[in-house]
Image 1 (cartoon, rainbow, N blue to C red):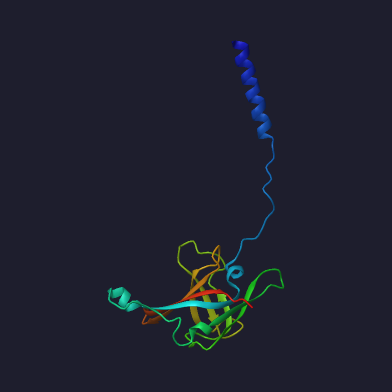
Image 2: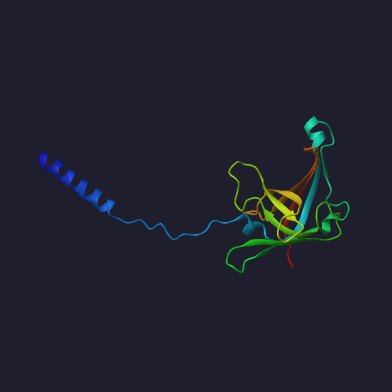
Amino acid sequence: MKKLLQRLLLLAIVLLVAYGCEEQEDGSYVPPITRYELIHGTWKLQTIKMTDELAKANNTKPVEMNLTKEFNFTSFVIALNVDSSSGEIKPTTFEVTGNAPALFATSGYWDMDTPFARSDGMPSKVKLFADEAKTQLLDELELITVPGKDVVLELRLVRYSEGNPYLSYVYRLRPKTK
């Protein structure tokens, strides 16, 4: 019995040493995916909903209204262009086309407040600028839904009065097909 225990102990030690010497392959470094990579391109409106933020805050009706078939919103298209010539994707210009009412700037330059998902749970902001240096901020759109398994981009435009939201628009967009 003593010899059997010694052999089992020796076998366990040999197996532990053999396992400890095995090298693990961790792969090579791959840069993280940025939000720029996920949202650049040309997007066509699927739906637009207007929310009365004051009614929502005061729990009164009506709170939400679908504007998709109103005011020719079905023609709304936004192109978020990037420059990838350096191997890194960088936001450049944006352009809104179609006959929908212009609720925010229709052309200029864009960037984001952060290229990655925020760790605090707050939505990232797509910032729209009038100038290439990106110093003259025109509007901000909150990034609500990022394309993933379901290829949908949702942007929210919020209007404020004295720092309080009173109206918001949620644009639900899909990639524009040729």
